[in-house]
Each structure stands twice: as structure tokens, then as C-alpha cells.
Amino acid sequence: MAFKAIAAEISGDFFLMERTVPPRGRRPLPHRHVNCSEAFWVLDVDGTITFGNDGDEPARLLVLHAPAMDAYFAELDAL
Image 1 (cartoon, rainbow, N blue to C red):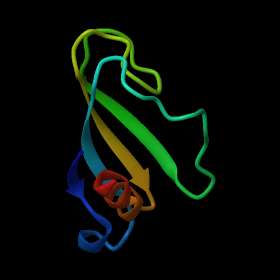
Image 2: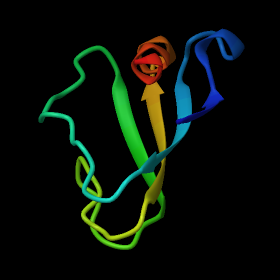
Image 3: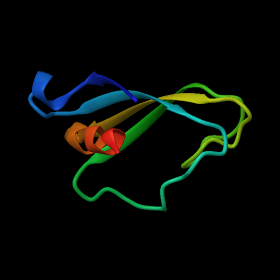
């Protein structure tokens, strides 16, 4: 995960990260966000993107959360 815009820099309005999704990697369980909106922009993929990457190569995404959720992803990345 590469953080592009974090809460501290933009008053918490949104969080933007670039994420690389490995082929056939672990997927999150189906879920929804009740306190924020989430959007994905696919930058590079060789296959299908759902909650994971069904292709043979890593996929690259831009992921936006509004309001910001970067603290959650920083803790997740530290694990």
C-alpha cells in the first residue's frame, strides 16, 4: 500500500492509496462501510477484479475512502 493522501494532510476529508493486489491472494469477507464511502480505480490488471485479483499478474488500484480511513490501513499494514 502506498498512501497518496492522508487525513492529517487534508483535514480528514478523504484518504487515497495505491494498492497492489497479488494474484489469487487473500480476499476480505463481503462487507460494507456504513461510516464512509469507498471507490476503486483500476490502473493495471490482467484478469478480473472483485474483492481480489483473479488474474495471473499483480493488479494496481487507486482506492479512495471518504472520510479518511488511513489509520485503519496503517495498522493493518503493520500487522
